[in-house]
Structure formats: structure tokens, C-alpha cells
Length: 446
Image (cartoon, rainbow, N blue to C red; front, side, top):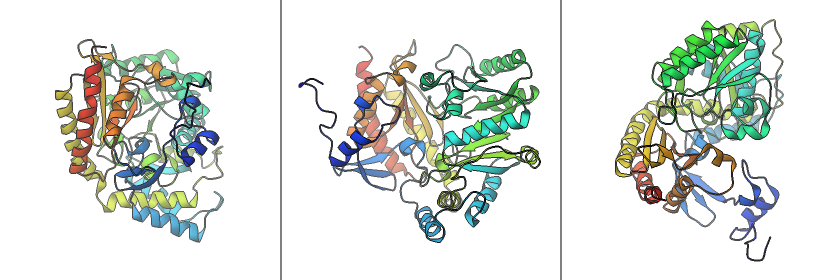
């Protein structure tokens, strides 16, 4: 490093500098990692070490669905740790049994039996194995604009370019196009018929089709209402299961309990995490239908974790689901989400760099463009695994400077605030985005 270049810890406080030196940053070139210390979080806001306060307009990583003041969840964790901080998965606790029962009640169709893990990626790993065990087939079909996790199985079925460093990954994964009307040459319903043809050509070798019902970190892609029902029909026609990844779209994010509910579809397997505890504890879950569950009565479920059904985590999950119910947050997310959608549409009308605004409930995406006629993106897929910043990064940074944190992935700002957000708080954050989008408007002629 030359004398002219700043040291990696310049401008960082002691905690941030220590973290920078001793802790890996995720999905990052470590030379670019500059962590920010968060000292407090309450409601829909968090505060950094300098005392600056920010509206959490993306629920951190689209996971803090309950915001940062869910007292029932906090109390449940403390009480469980005081009673029994950990027991082996061969034992159970009241919270684990009740959460399993509760998930069977709130998920669609006859999903009834759950395997608990500690994250969304582990939930997907379990789904892959269960689908293969149950069908006796190996191949998993997923889509190119998808994210399913970072472990070897889940990164292999992930479509976005972060998978490339881990390839060849696990065998038997194949990719299909997405229902992405704004950025694809295929109409969304043409893309689903393309999947039908793929399965026909693959023969009877595909165990499952794995999809996010609404694509999350790769752009908030909302398919037509007939897409997911048709996809399930295609899967079953070819002897495959439909697995829906609800890690990001679950627990009220869409204004329904789950993204599949938006389309009236009952999947064969569902994965979840994030909103399952509102991120108060790391917990993933994989729930299957009665028929799949019955298969393992006399066939070994060859899968497990030390922390499967961790007492504190399932206590948090049970309290979180009860909070969604008691505070009527699912219906509220639909109502407040409609207001958020209207405000984002207003932004799109005022800013020519907004190519498309899309989403449902409190799950919204703002895709930017340098040329709305040609739909030229500011950010490319390759940017996700490259050094440097993009115009979309600059827009997010400008909003942050105005007190609003909004996540951005490739070419899309992801607006996914806690379900507890008020219309006044939405207005405050939208004002920050309104000013920030001047950055992309000005960049259109670069």
C-alpha cells in the first residue's frame, strides 16, 4: 500500500477497526470492507456509533419484519434461556412443539411437518435432500435470477453470479429463465412454458422445481397471477415437486402470510427463515406436506443439525408468529403496503431514471435505467462480483446521507421496511429517496 492510499481503518472507530481486522466481511473484497457499528435499534430505526439515526427501509437484509422493538419476542428468548438454554434435537421443548403446530396452521394447504435449522440456506439444503429422498430423483431445476443461499447445495441452485466462484457445486442442478418482463426477451408466461419444455427434454429425472414465488434480492420480480399455479401444474405433470423459497417473501412481507398465498398456490415443500423470528434469533424451517412426511415414517430422514430446534430460536419463532397474529400485522402490511406502492409510483413519475417500480405489500423494487426506451441498466449482473461502486450504489448512499437505509442489489433498490412502519415514516423515507434519485437522473447522460 502506498503512502498516498488511506489505511483500511482510517475513519473507523475502535470497534469498527477491530472488526475490520479480525472479522471477514460477507460477499466482499476485504479491501473494500468498512463496517459501521450499530449501537441501538428501536422501532423502524437504528443508530450508529456517531449517534446518527436511520430509517430501516429494507429491514436490514429484508429480515427484521417486526422492527426492532418486539418485546414479546425479546421476553420469550430470555425466559427460554433461563429455563433451558440448549437441549439436543432428540429432546423437545414446549416452544418447538407449538411452533411446529403453528406453522402447520399458517402455511397453505396440507403442509404439516417441519425440520428446523438455523438459516435460510440450511432450510434450502434440507428441501433439496428431502425432495431427492422422496422422489428418488436427483435434478433440481431453479432459475437464473434467484438467490437460495451460500452453502454448497443452496449456492448451486442459486442463479445469480455469486454462485460462479463455487462452481461446479453439487451435481444435478439446472437453470431456467425467470418471469422478468422488464429485463428479458421472454414474456413471463413464455418463460414458464419454456420450463415445461425443459422438463420434457430432461425426461423423468427432475426431483423438484425450486423458486422464490416473488424473486427477492435479484430484483423483486412479481410474476403474473397465473404463473405459479401453472408452474405447479408443470412440476406435477413431470413427477416433480414444487418447492417455494419463502425465506424473504414470508411472514407478511407481501401482505399475505407467504408469497405463495398471493397466487393461491399450495406448494409441496416450503422453506422459510428471516421473518420467522423477525431476525431476533437465527432460525430456518423446511415444512412438507402430509404425504411427504408420511414417506419418512419408515424411510430414514438422513439429515440433522446440532442446533436443530434450538430452544431459544424456536421460542423466538413462536413469539414472532403470535405477534404477527395478535397485532394483525399481515393485514396491516397489505394496507400500508398499498400506501407505499402509491408513494413509489409517485417517485417513478417524477424521476426519468426509474425504469420500473414493482412489488406487492411491503416488498417493493425500484429498478433504475440510464435509458428508459432501451431499458439500459446502470448496474449489471457482473457488478455483484466486481470491485467498485455503481450509480445504484451512489443512489443508496445519497439516501443514507439523508437518514434512510435502503438495500440495493445489481440494478434495483429494495424497499422492504418492517411491517410496523407508519405512513408518516414511509413519507420521511420517500422524501430521502426522492432527493437521492436526482443522482441517477443526473447520471443518465454519463
